[in-house]
Image (cartoon, rainbow, N blue to C red):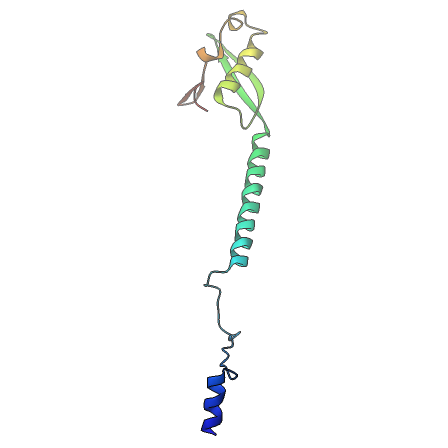
Length: 125
């Protein structure tokens, strides 16, 4: 019997097979398919976030402001959420130029936006 086993081992016909245990948790091991799935999910979420940000920047805001030349002139103007302060001030300047001659020759660079204790110059975005 031992001779038969020795012949089988020496001839290479009898080999040990190692089977995987399906009960073992292998989620911590690197897996190309799992990594590709995670990468695709990350890209999908990134695109969704960017689309949501672009949609938010396109929303229209109605801003009430007061032009002060010794007396207050309350007006409203509509801007997109993604507009800079400079774009907002240019929109304000162009709407005020219709009613106030002094605003026709002023650039928006000379204007500032004051909100209570906060002063925002045009170069802040």
